[in-house]
Image (cartoon, rainbow, N blue to C red; front, side):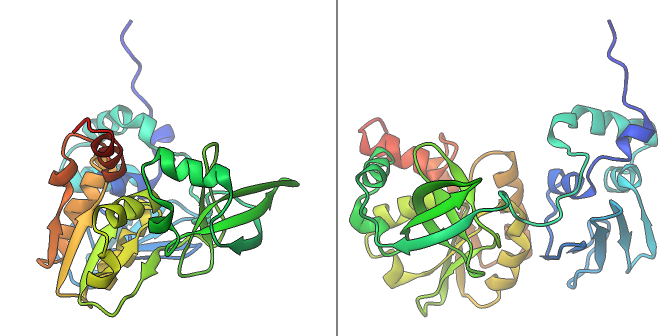
Length: 286
C-alpha cells in the first residue's frame, strides 16, 4: 500500500530548529524564548535570523521575510510545497513536534557533592572505556546527586555555567544549567570535541594535551554557535567531532565559519567517534 504523505497541518508543527540542524545550520546564541542564526538564505557576518521557540516560527530580519517550517524548507531547498512535504516526510523520525524550553536534558537533578574520583565502580567504568584514572582526574570529579528522590553517583564534567555532564555504566544524565565546558590553559590553539569521553580519549592519546592547547567540549551539538564565537580568540582550531550526520554537519558549519578550523576526524574515519576508535586501538584491534 502506498504511504500517505504528511499534510501541511502536521508538517507545520515540525521543529524549525531541527530543520535548520538537518540542513547544517546551528544557532549562534540561544535563550529560553529564541535562537539566532546566521541566515541560511543569504550571506551575513552577524546573526539576524531568529527562530521563536514558543511560536515555532522564523524571521529573517535582513531579508524581511519569515514563516513556518514549510516556508523555510521551500526557501533553503528552492523547492515547491509538495517537494518540501516530501523532504519533511523523509526526515520525519528526526523531527520533534515540541520545542525544548531550555538546554536541560534532565530536570530535577540536585548535586549533593563533587570530590576526587575514587569509587571503584567509576574507576572500573573508566577502565572499560580505556581511560586511565590519572588522565581523568584533572578534568573530572566524582559527583553524587539526587534524582527523583534516589541517590546516584557518576563521573562529572563541569561546564562553564556550573552544571555537570554525568556518566556512569548505567546512566547518561546532565544537571542544569546545560552549557559548554571550556578548559583554558592560556594557549592560542583550541581543540573542540563533543563529549566527556572524547576529551578523555584525546587526553589519553596526547599525555600533555593541556600543555599545548585550550579545550572546548560542546556537551551538546546545539552549542555550535558558542563554539563559533570562541574560535575568534585562537590561531588554530582542531575539530574532533563525531562522524554521524549531526557531527558531520557541525564540522562543516565550523569549517565554513573560519579558515582556522581543521577537521581531525580522519584519525578515526572508520569509527563513530574518537572514544570508539580509542577503545579498539587499546584492545589492539586497530
